[in-house]
Length: 74
Image (cartoon, rainbow, N blue to C red):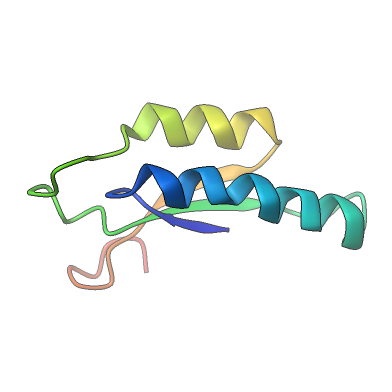
């Protein structure tokens, strides 16, 4: 599941996607939380990495940061 590190609402939206996984995927599905746009350090409102890490941990997911623009984590 992907969210933008420049947008708290996109992180909050992952909760509904997590419910979809709970309802439709196998119980042992491998989950990933991906924080996109990690290159955008000028963004007005950044979601701290630790917030994403803690959310991933709370749902048993792995966590990664990516930037397609800067070819980070691709």
